Length: 455
Image 1 (cartoon, one colour):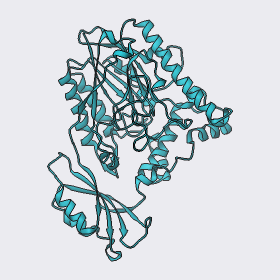
Image 2 (cartoon, one colour):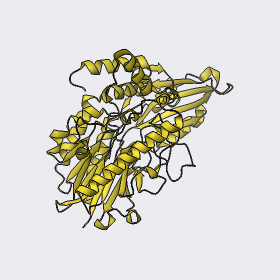
Image 3 (cartoon, rainbow, N blue to C red):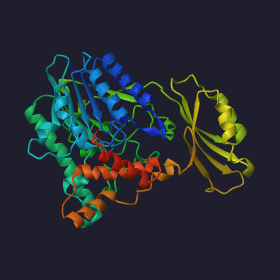
Image 4 (cartoon, rainbow, N blue to C red):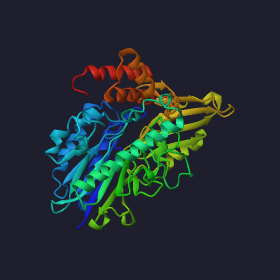
């Protein structure tokens, strides 16, 4: 007897690449996951956060996700789906569907606090195996703001070190309490945890470090956070798959498809994890199972071409346009003579009869110093001047927006903001990062707030 689990997350349904819609790509991704559930005869699907790319997903994005959940009901081997909210999701929005979904054995943990003491019952969910009997338990932990632990900002505690330690202690206690409850209520069954946070990998000294989403932390979390009674810890947020450094059996699933050209260039093999738990795995970290990677198909080529004009044309000629079912997306980094900087019309004409979409380019005069670049993002009908998304990534890096907003509301209204309001602020900042400006993000947010069809 064993319990087979598919672990995924960071689906980012509705995410656009430099203003280009990828919804059909997301559809193919979701139904590939369905195929893996059938092929592996998996009983449980865990989705560890960031279901949607935005807190106010488009109607098309919602329809795609809910249609997919409905189709999952047709898979005979699949007994349960457990979904947690990530930092990109609206926790309250996902939580609103929980009671309805529960009749379909789809369990959603969105809001990171409840109004009564029964919250722990909502987060600790028994899992059914092939027989329909309980063969495991999951402690489904969503993305948690520091604020929910009473840690509003670093200045409220004696030092940065004290604030960081208080947060780590609180989070570790939460996972220990959930493990204790799972062991007490469902003795003898292996226990799995879920989470949406930043923890360093075993190869933490190699390559760029993951972006920390908890502003209170100066040093990343690691596997010491998780109680050793967990046979497996299913994590989301980092878009690469790896094992977390430390004694626990904690793994990131990564995003099933790359969310940017940078991610497409990182050489990470993408997919979902298959985890198989046996009764003897319960509370025994020495027998913790290693997940098996189910490799995702190559749905779309995302590539950056660099060089002088002739070199770029040659690289375009060498692209294998049959390698993936969706149109190849290309970003151009061109070094050109000053009199040829605008070779966009020639470039478009060169690819006009090919299945290629030029999503943007950056030009640099051959004789210019580094930094005198012209960055252009391309739409279907127009050319926009804008900054590279990669350069915008650090726009809010030096500001603790959540803490700043908490203090502002307390000063103006003498009360703490709720999680939905705080999450919306963070997503406005994220939207500004992706869509070209804070004013545009605020306008979009105001429209969605005033639209009763979107939460």
